[in-house]
Amino acid sequence: MSASIEIAGVSKVYDGGVRAVDAVAMDIRQGEFFSLLGPSGCGKTTTLRMIAGFETPSSGAIRVDGADITHVPAHKRDMGMVFQNYALFPHRTVAENVAFGLRMRGLDKATIAAKVKAALAMVELSGLEDRRPAQLSGGQQQRVALARAIVIAPRVLLCDEPLGALDKKLRQQMQFELKQLQKKLGLTLVFVTHDQEEALAMSDRIAVMNGGRVEQVGTPTEIYNQPTTRFVADFIGDTNIFRGERTAAGRSLDVGKGLILALPPTDAHGTGVLSVALRPEKIRIAPRTDAATTAGSSAHGIVENTNFLGGAVLYRVTLEGGHRVLVQQPNAGTSRLFVPGNGVTLEWTPADLVVLKD
Image (cartoon, rainbow, N blue to C red):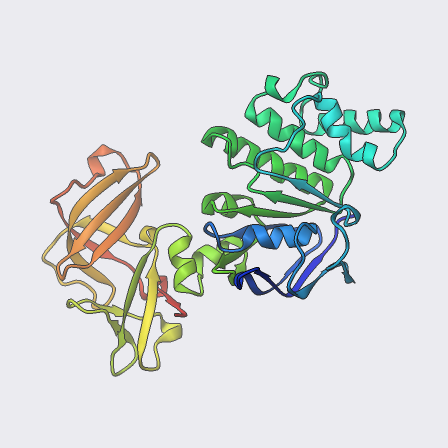
């Protein structure tokens, strides 16, 4: 059975007053694929290490299925761990690497052999039992590390950037395989990554971290479509962020240089300074016409740069007032491409804007 995890106001302060994790609080549900996402130094790996028992919180508590494990040694937490560098024993065979945790638990040879065989079959490495790590590809080594973690039947599997050393194509393949295996085994999996696309593709929910704190917790759809802070909006994918002051009526935002944005109907009130986000794919681009545009939800501009992404095209457009805007459209063929210097009209709807907390 997998387990739920509660992180209750956990902080970690190192010697010299360096606060790596600052009052983090979150609940990880049983059987959930939960990602800790953020830039280097945001505290995600330290948080994972405290869950694993490799670090002790300076304050707060960690509970598994309601039981406080804050000061329980790592080897008594019933958790498996997969590292970025695999941490395999180079002088031992694949089978010996996978069997390590079982031997430490004192199981008999026959039981160990059966469990190792089953674990290697799960990660599609049957027949490679006698090879050593140096004889394997990077993807195969990662599978060995995964088999070693799951062979002990942990309630929780912890992964610290486990796919970071793989090339893009193999990384995508391993994403599918890891997600499929996690669901098959029903494990609670906590996954650390700095890769936004990886977190969005694999996770049931994501905690976005910054400066030792949790900025937002939500499903991939919520994190991407409804970011609550400027950091989350800017960190997750491409986005256009505008900051300005509400107009007197509170229904629009004056961001300067002649650009006024109509605010979403759900937020068309109040006064003061405000930031909003607009995803590039929410903007429609068309050849410029002299026809009047809809006030607050369109603008004229000139294409500055074109980036062909294969399935999509990303444009950087300079608006008449000087604002630079990213616009992404599906690839509709070369006849529909705009080139630098083209005059264009951009359109969106007020509902596409997301109001951010500063």
